[in-house]
Image 1 (cartoon, rainbow, N blue to C red):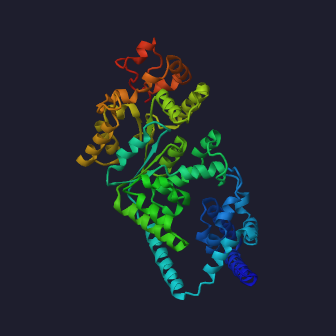
Image 2: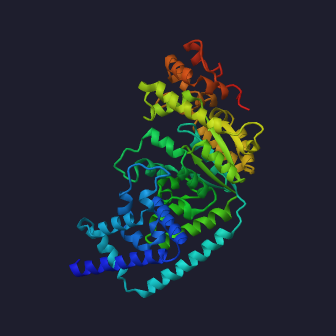
Image 3: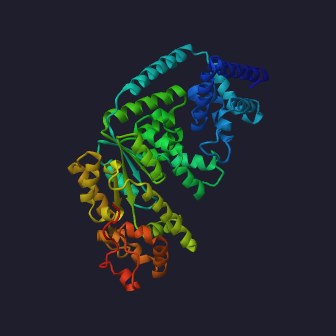
Length: 464
């Protein structure tokens, strides 16, 4: 690209940017503050293109890469400083390393195809009209949040929910947002940071994204969520729209996907459900208080089974078993402290479920879960649950042997055949109080008693 064309492209882009800022800030002070806040919010969410197409095409990725490594909800200095945003943007325009970027963008802005421009304008007008219609539509759907922990059977529980054609199901909508929160948008940084991970779970950012997903407010769902491959795990709800967002090349195309997904979510389903291992009970409680349609399922599993499963996948270091147990059971205790108690008006919208109980009698607990959502499971749903749970309960005694059905109790208590008595005692001592309140046997008298599945490790829950 020649020097003259490059200068023309930069000049055009600069005019667009300054014109945009002029239109936003020419009015009174309150409007200026609102505009700054809009840019701040858009900058956080990666949706600058919704406010200014020039930023969408020419500056979004560069700006996102400049985010600080770590931030919290109160740290908005970089986001509110519009001059900083503009400076970073223009720096990238003048960086010779980005020649391919602004070569392509200049071509976009110098496109003389007026027919395409008119089509885009008409499409945008229709999208705006549809968006207004959506915002005015009263949404009577029930809303369900499944608060769970890694390796507690949450994926299986989520599948039970999404077997119903009446449930719009979100699988881990906080996955990509947590990564962005922990790394500050820098993929080269370590994603696993337990302190930052826990901070994210109780952040307003997590709460806002879950609320937007539950209410089918797609325009306020984090962009990374809509592009996350986890969207493909909900084949009857979010999967189709994942492709739409991946293929969107302009803000107008993105907005059409968002409008279509919003309409589909609100008009075709009786329940919206979010399953997340990245959400604090404090935020779930806040959602219940703000929205009378929100219900919460709290999924629990014996900490010994959880830690073994995590260890086998490389997510728990048994050389630091005390620390791992303390982290897990501290989180459990914290969440249980926030959970509505007997006598609380919110108690009717809270349901605690143990993985061991679902594994033992899946049909009965499917009925309970569906009743809690205000639905009745069809024969197709019950058949799907039966097939899923039975296929998970098979083992091969040898490589060439046919699969043999396992007893459901053996599935949920497989840790008793794998962990040593010493490991069981280590976890039990750290987690004793939480385990007792959840109805789990704390101690075993001997290794023989530990291995004997006739000795139950699951009793009645003691929390009211």
